[in-house]
Length: 138
Image (cartoon, rainbow, N blue to C red):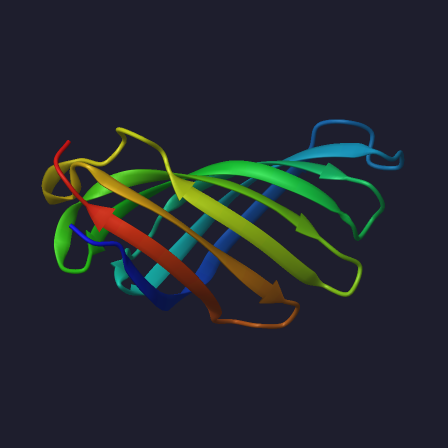
């Protein structure tokens, strides 16, 4: 099956962050749990996402995380995990890339492979994403 390149949007409904190192020192570590809702080729009402965050300063740093997506891709139902990595800057911009975790897709999405990313700008309520994917045999 050929790779399909597409786009959509997501919104974040919940962001809970806790410091795991002293909050007044840098670098600083934190953990965040997030709930996202996807529209477009990825349709998911409420994902489960967990990030480990390393702050360089109060407004800059890097993160890595995993997101469990349960819903549909191009009309096919199932679940899959995304591995995410990104950086955030003091201007409020976040750049993130993600990849489907190999072997994680279930249901009609078994064999899903794909990569994508997004750029979030402070104040946006709808974040555009790109996704290049293919659904093959598991």
